[in-house]
Amino acid sequence: MTKFMKSAAWRATAMAAAISAFGATSVLAEDITYVSGAVGNAIDNFKALVKPWEDATGNTVTIVPMPASTSDQFGQYRLWLAAGNSDIDLYQTDVIWAPQLAEHFVDLTEVAGELAKTHFPSIIESQTVDGKLVALPIFTDAPALYYRKDLLEKYNLPVPKTWEEMTATAKTIQDGERAAGNADMWGFVWQGNAYEGLTCDALEWLKSSGGGQIVEPDGTISVNNPNAIAALELAKTWVGNISPEGVLAYQEEEARGLWQTGNAVFMRNWPYAYGLGNGDDSAVKGLFDVTTLPTGLDSTTSAATLGGWNVAVSKYSKHQEAAISLAMYLAGPEAQKQRAINESNLPTIISLYDDADIAAAQPIIPRWKDVFLQAVPRPSAPTRGKYNEVSSLFWNAVHNTLAGDGTAADNLEELEVLLTDLKGGESW
Image (tube, rainbow, N blue to C red; front, side, top):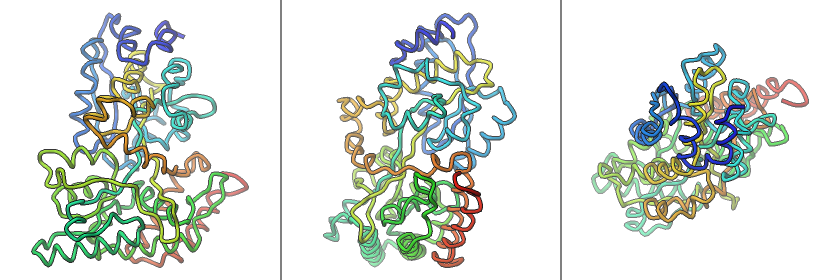
């Protein structure tokens, strides 16, 4: 264990600790390569985020942007790591990837011991595999229902509580706005492309309707049930009705793009879209709010897929100490606070939800606690290394249903068979 690792365990809850523990004493400046997906203005924000660390340590950070699709990111990460690629020092990782990629990452349990205590325990636990902390949380995620408060007021309609109410309200306002001359208005935009994002959306429909979590925490395959079938059949009615046909190719940015033109009543999206929606170039600035996602007709439970991003240090990095220093900074309070203020990212450090500066700059963040408390995890824990295949099979079954290629009942019955074959025994 290096001197840096021993000292950082108790001093790294602020950037100065990470810097004093390593970077400032480095004889030769190092360039750290950081790979990450990118949505919105994430690249520009990241450059500003790491600049204090660069200035203080003399090191530099090169970001390698990846496609916004988390499915594409995971595929590329797995190829690089399997090859022992030493060109990448740090990976920004989805909350669900820890069990699948753990063997390729540095164990941060000891070095991040004190810092880890300041984060939500459940999130630290999600990044701990076989007793090893393989990634540090940098922000968490849970989606919400964005709604045009001006249009709800105009039509004297309440914020919908159920998916059925949302469907009816979206149709009423969409038709009214089109009759008034806006032929481009749609009722609801979301993520319908065949990728991980659709797994997130559809899991919310199922869970909030009493249809389970695809695979339950004990490993039971639960996806083929009447409530799940009903939830998918309702979603199918949205396509071409309150959502454009093209929604079946939408990811997060396509949904946000249409929303920010002012041509959607409702949107399902992650917290990053809140700050961008209130930007000076947004047609909906000041006109919208967010709430928890709707429930099913016979349910009182909302469900928001637990997301979130972490930073992991590659075992194959040639600059591990500098990479750990940067990881500690990014997971620490200063960087998380900056992200919260500038990008409306949800902190994983508990105390930041009571930070006055964050509340003043992003008053939505303290309120997002209600959304976060309704979060439901994807079944990566019970399915472990097979999660990626589970998710792919699920989103393809859902996408086929939405596109009219088979009924929800038929597609979920077939999915159950495929998942049973994939499981292959008593446990995953």
